[in-house]
Image: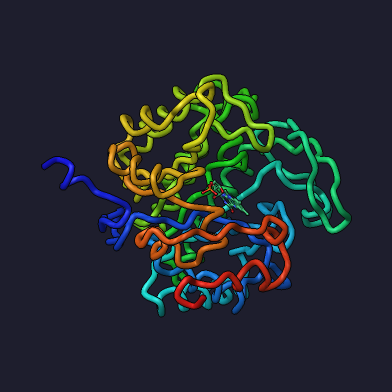
Length: 362
Ligand SMILES: Cc1cc2nc3c(=O)[nH]c(=O)nc-3n(C[C@H](O)[C@H](O)[C@H](O)COP(=O)(O)O)c2cc1C
């Protein structure tokens, strides 16, 4: 009896203010195919519309300001032309009866003076450089030591998140996801490896999550309840990220946000992670009463299991969505899944972007 009432990936679900026909989410995927001026266009609209049968599409990260840019040809959301470009995307998705959130992005220290106006230093909570290389117009160059944000800068960036949220509304999105994951600005504040501040934005967990709470509050201020999600990646080491206690840190963040009327928390925690990696999802689930999307290396079996177990409500798929525009239909019918070509992940044209066929078109 109990087994029959358990949800699967194709059981409709309410997420905040939205009613979704299934629990398959398209994860945010940077593809570096915006046009000049970081303006999205018709090619991007085709790509997202092809994937509109997802319960929810989450756009690639979209920088809220020139300062928030970390990679070439990623779409912004701070100029009128960018808002108009995104309108092509939302109209195309809605014409296919889909729903799409925009991912609001500020990369913080994961940038380079060659990508910043006037050759300015990238910004971060603390003047600590990530290890690695930034891909710029002059090729790969080492990351630099960023400028630590002043208090007035922090207030400005919070305002810029609010403006981005307002622009996403003007562009016709159904809601927004705040990018708090993968070593970008919010994550840099939350995790103690990258935040060594001595003021009330650093030190204790309460202080390290203050910036995130302010951004969430400002963005919900624009959208109202049930239309704003937040993405977290508690144990992702990319971009030189570390935290001394990911379970305590991220369950603490989840608890602090529990009363803020988020549509969901989106937790990147790989199904295939090694047993030595701490699992944060159970503690986050226990601390947060709202919807949870989980993401990372899921397939049909593991995604079904995680939803049926109640550990998460929905599952986001990244790489699989690159090569399978009709992922929902393929999973539902148990059809084979196409394998994406990594060589065309970042940048280029329609090849490896809009030319992956749906099964029905084969
Ligand atoms: C090409 C590519 C681009 C990505 N871009 C973003 C991004 O813009 N924002 C984000 O939060 N995560 C981004 N990610 C991470 C994915 O959303 C996802 O967390 C990751 O691929 C793991 O899920 P998967 O195993 O289903 O692919 C990207 C991943 C890939 C492969």
